[in-house]
Image (cartoon, rainbow, N blue to C red; front, side):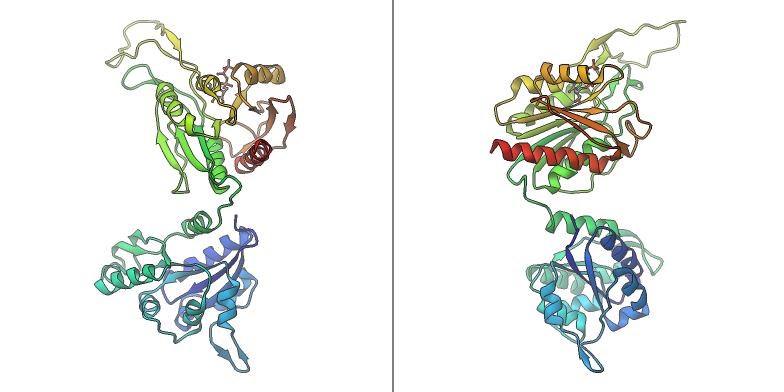
Length: 400
Ligand code: CTP
């Protein structure tokens, strides 16, 4: 999402400036074109040569350098976003009151692009009424403020005022300014992760699904502009974008109810979850004691969510299922496609050591209603999600 985006990074005098080095690295890795302007006091915390090497661009500090004048107006106009991270208490006050005594402030005052700040200061300064007032003033000028974090501070105290981590700052920029619009106005429903079916209050039937594939899909749909409802079972993976609506469920029955309620308003639904096919006929109300030598558990079928949505599906809705097969892969997948009235089924490979449950990578083949088969190489789950979403965007456009 940041490929080719122009980011003007301002760094002010704060101990958190050491994190700017990682921030530059991350932005550059994501393909952003990064230009850096620092205040004279930021030089006490981070060196211009490190920043210039990482960003591959000269770092600018002064308004005038012997015989050259740094064109702050053009820098402010060049950028897609100006990000000031860290923003010290002193620079915050200057920005709030229009003071222009260094190049960074001149760039800020002449920026025509959105300006985002990531403040960093000690807790007492952060809670001082002037800092609060100055933050509010910045917001009223239309600037965005990335919330500070709570944690260990340079003073040795523990509290609020830490600059957000570089990964959070990058996610904030991506989510706020660089979402695409191919799926704008579309609603998507995605399921992810395992379901747990209770045997008794302490035991359950579950599986090893990590939910990573479903989350990658939810994130890809969201970053293409869709409004996303993610219904997920027990997962440990963090969902990085705040704008994705998440419904946490435990059982197949709960997942079914959530999906049936969201589906009528959805344009796209992708069922990635590893839903238990069977559940105990009765969940024992007390912990089952180890009294017998053998133990029989009666299982009954759960509701098939994909099939239920297939029977509710209206003309313009796109329904996608996943399949995991150990034999007759193609035949079984095509059978699933038909029986569940899906528009596409994504077949997970069971024949590749780098693909599957809990792994970072996956290898898929997609079958659609027209019996067209799309094969892909092993790749990260994020890139698999991109392939699936690209295909969906094409189908959405074909139907429009
Ligand atoms: N699925 C579902 N509800 C269930 C079981 C599965 O919605 N109770 C969905 C999965 O999320 C997946 C698709 O159905 O998108 C296929 O799941 P899979 O386990 O491969 O197949 P099943 O339909 O369960 O059939 P079988 O286990 O016999 O292959």
